[in-house]
Image (cartoon, rainbow, N blue to C red; front, side, top):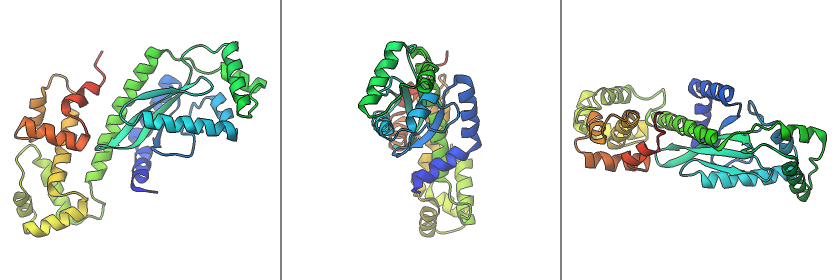
Length: 294
């Protein structure tokens, strides 16, 4: 398993994710999963509240290949933001990217629903499409499952997408926190330095200041800090400040400049540049993507 896979596994096993998954499925009646960017499996197969029609389709190898192609298309289309695609049988799925900095490491995915009530005509079209793939879904079990599919309005789908965006941002914050934390066995010097940085993140921090705090020379500190955290001192401070800024940006009453100074940046220009380097977009753009309060 690569680093991103391990990170997604950690996130999936976290209490935060499991609580959200449980609440989401109960509130919407829809399945949800946190999936990697590339996958050879149907992401929602076997998940709580999986659509029974989709479960039957997943058991058909030829039909499954078509569904996997749709998943690949959804991954490409959702790399920069929420996307909803409709499969060959008329059911739609929505994916929202989860990022580590500017890199997409996975997707929150939901769906297996219809936007319009199923009809005899739409089922006939699904049967015809399945026959083209060499699959027979004309039996009573498949038909019953098809007509039992949850129907969700476009307005509700948009609302669901907004919920996923919020949670994806929370997962991104968690991912970045994990990325800037060293392993549990990190040297005490690194632990102390990181804690000092967090405690004084709103102040002007210098490499020499932190090195002196942990009683080592600057050269040695640079070497051990990069080895222990995977980041340079400047990168770690910037990422820590940006993560704090993202939480402040959730408050619409705070101006961008206020957020910048609140987390320790000495100029708005510097804040905008560092934020974009870490997140991949400006603070203003990031804030406009957040769902507006009702």
